[in-house]
Image 1 (cartoon, rainbow, N blue to C red):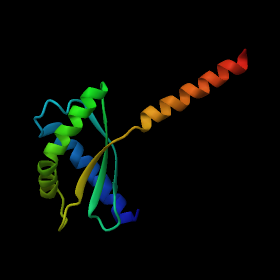
Image 2 (cartoon, rainbow, N blue to C red):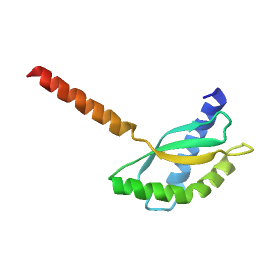
Image 3 (tube, rainbow, N blue to C red):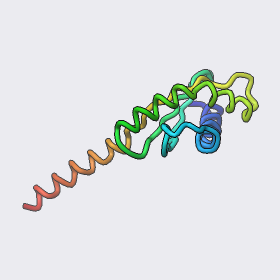
Length: 116
């Protein structure tokens, strides 16, 4: 990612987080964290990685609500950014925390077996 793309990604992460937190009134979104944003080099697409607090059912409902609200979020983002064309938003679930916990659990089990 270029330096400009990294700066745009940081701004998008901050602004989308604020829009979701303070302007969206959909209760199905619940507690959400924007964990990362990556932008293509041509700044046409932004992948927004999100993490939900709670069970899988809440995660699915939250993703559906985000998909419904995508147009509104993008229009609000356009008002806040001084860009000619605001990137198209793609919301993706960030499962890195789950993968990290799984790896940690495996390492813990290996250490327990080694100690026996």
